[in-house]
Image 1 (cartoon, rainbow, N blue to C red):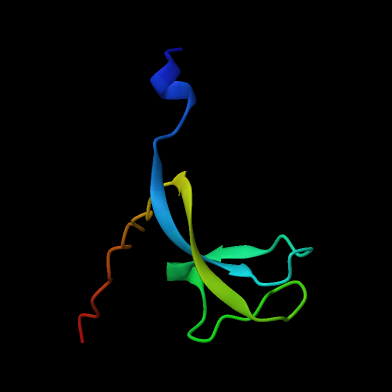
Image 2: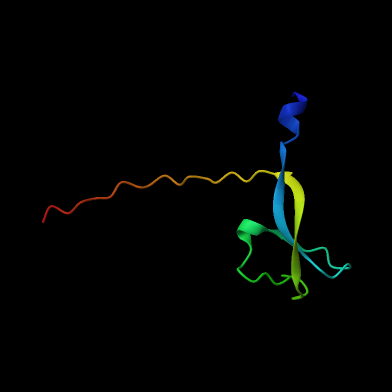
Length: 70
């Protein structure tokens, strides 16, 4: 394997992370609620940036719709 195949490309990603220094929780901005609350300690969160692999949205195949003859 080449080095490119082993390591995913990292991109700057907006995140929310817990304000509590001892809590390690964080969540991507696009997956967070409108008013983000820490999922672990329920404390406040603030915006930050991390270099993460890009998310790939999976496209679900649509099943063919059977039409009634009546």
